[in-house]
Amino acid sequence: MENSSPLVLMLLGAALMLCLHPLQAQIDGTGLFHDYYAKSCPKAEEIIKSIVEKAVKKEARMAASLLRMHFHDCFVKGCDASILLDDTSNFTGEKTANPNRNSVRGFDVVDNIKAALEKACPGVVSCADIVTVAARDSVVLSGGPSWIVPLGRRDSRGASLQGANQNIPAPNSTHQTLETKFKLKGLDVVDLVVLSGGHTIGLSRCTSFKQRLYNLTGNGKPDPTVDQGYLKQLTTLCPQTGTDDNQTTPLDLVSPTKFDTHYFKNLESGKGLLITDEILYSTKGSKTAALVKFYASHSQAFFQQFAKSMIKMGNITPLIKPSGEIRKNCRKMN
Image (spheres, rainbow, N blue to C red):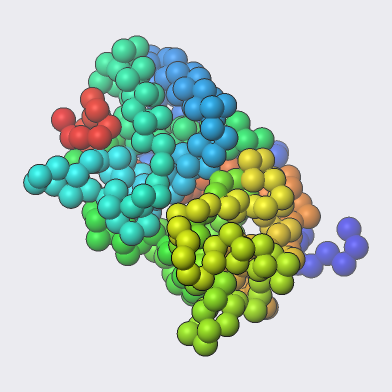
């Protein structure tokens, strides 16, 4: 390969190693196993996949919604299905947190999966594992990579509104804030860039990126990193005043329902939608900029690393037996 940088060679080597050594079923130290339900509910993953497939066929956007739900769950208290709990008169969950309110979607799909699993094998499959497997299946159904999901998570008996507000990166986070919040969860810069690549599918509301169109730094001017043609397109969709900021536009304007590398190519041309997208590339001299450039032209490496990073994220402080519980209804504790 001509003019290959040390970073490019390192990443290609990592991708090759993944090809030679398939992702392991058990992740050291977590107590999770790919065949956890082999005897207790052998058709669990098949049931989850069939319902996710129907949901995505009905609405392609649902794939991105289920992937995002998994991310928002894992960044608060770990991957424990705390995001699914409804508020009650004496309990406050995470659904009304700023990153989740009127934004996180797919709860009805999880309900349908849980109902089917309770019918097939009552009290066996956790809501936390449902969310994790559904995220994997959503990526696959969108044309992305597959991976072995370690299983055996249990469901939390609590939630953290404060944690949801503090731990989930906001769409206007700085480069340093992104790195810090990922690092606090045991995720490195490669994980940050690759998992951000999940924005190759899905939509975002005007309210999530409007600041950069009109007044990024308080000077009344747009973000200078936005391509001018793209800026005009976005300001037409999201006028500064007199509009519904809940209107949506694709995170990847080229192929919004296909899991591919156009997300990274968009960043290279100033067409990343969120501040947290474009900043990965516009922060010149950063490792994230080099990674964006690499993955834009190495789709296989992106797919391989995305699978690895998803497993890593899915293993953030999971609850395992005897901790937690197996909820009968994902929206409330037993």
